[in-house]
Image (tube, rainbow, N blue to C red):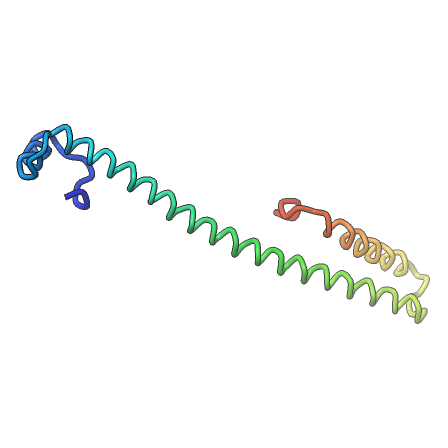
Amino acid sequence: MFESKTKLEARQKLQLAVELGLQPRQVAIWFQNKRARWKSKQLEREYSILRAQYDALLANFESVNKEKQSLMKQLSKMVDLLERQDLISKDGFEGETKCVKDEATASDQSGENSEWWEFWP
């Protein structure tokens, strides 16, 4: 009966009490306890779903962050290689490359100690 109705009207409560040989108050308390347990189980299920979604997002974030760090290291290595090969002209591109290199270095350093919410848009 609880599956069809979580709350009973007085008439239904009395009828069920008579069928079970209980007092109407006992039936009311049983339904109240059952609703409390049902709500608790529902919260546990919702928490489990949210936790699984959070864990998936966290794993995805960590994966993307590692990929970003790897790309920033590759970028820094490429900039170093270009500088060593003297392929960077002195027409202003050198300054831009230095900025990219500095940004890559700063990102490497800050990414290790940063929390995930600092990267959240």
